[in-house]
Length: 365
Image 1 (cartoon, rainbow, N blue to C red):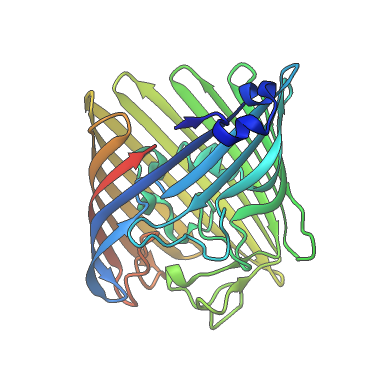
Image 2: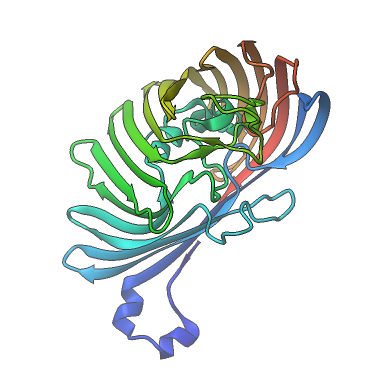
């Protein structure tokens, strides 16, 4: 939906500025019914939202400054269509809010922005992104490939950040971000490079956080890095966290192959632990409007392991509207005490198997 300033603004702004400025409203709404085999030890049926794509509404604007330069801004809010609630009640534009300038050199922005792991890998080259399934992100999301609600403990989105994104040069695009710590202890930087040419797309990203804290309740973990009694209220404290992620996809006519790897190193008080994930997927478009998708992944945190399989069928009713069915199945092994499909919560102590079947509808605008 595209607007130029009209009406009352016509009497307030110069005609030249009106002709050169534009604001686009965009968004996504997703809702469906999910049956979970075990959640906190019990089977449950949910009417939940934001699965194929996060529920969000955004405003993107630009103004032509001449000589190839543009002033730009973006404001994006996340919400839940099943309740109408904001995704993060303490922040109106929790997903993104930035202003900047775009020119022949690239784009320079400042504000609340994404860790470069997301645009480089998480939102483009993962099973979750290419199958349209939020539950396909890795257990606990410790590799930060999905946007989790930001809060004072877990700065998943780069608040107070400066970001530069290069222009596309022969299919190569690079990004660099730095999170200004202001009065808090959390410092962060993030870098990525993507290459896309013809049927091949690849990405590589690196992020580093100092003094980051993790909520491990989603994995049912109560002790790590020598810290005990961990819960949703008692978070894991780290001195430093570094994450490397790589991914690739290749299109063979109506078949898309894709895969991704992540490695997270967490350090605290002289102790360290690694979180590793590997995944692969295949999308097969067997009619112009219907696609079948299979994805597999394995995630390890020390001696804990989670193995996941997903099967999906997506049917497009139009360019903007889709209906879909998805089965996600996860098994915990090693020292993992329970399965924990991302976004659904842990299965319950001793429940090492968790499955979810979902029927949903998604509309983008």
